[in-house]
Image (cartoon, rainbow, N blue to C red; front, side):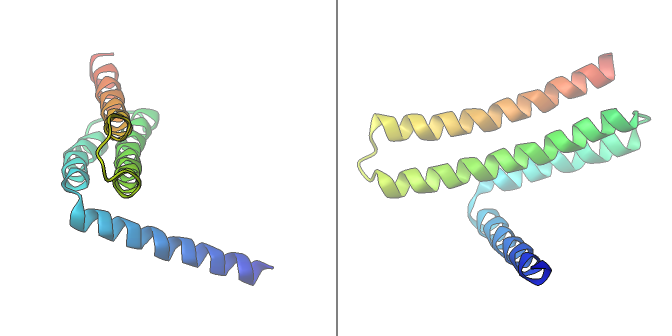
Length: 117
């Protein structure tokens, strides 16, 4: 039982890493958000923030990356499912993109609250 679960965990890690590498190679937005996260994380770790404040900023950055990966996945599926470029396909892609934007806004709000109080 434990061996089987360990194997499943290993496979999940392999598949997740493959997904990250593919998105990194083909999705400029993932690189953009990763590059935006580096100074944000560095600043959060450098400033005299509470552990909770630091955690919120770091988690927010990771959630932006997760949202971007989900957005990329949705865009890929929509592209496969709808080659006619319908309004619904465009809406689905725009809504997924809006999810990334809202994640980024949430981190911006967190920074404002942490810095302004």
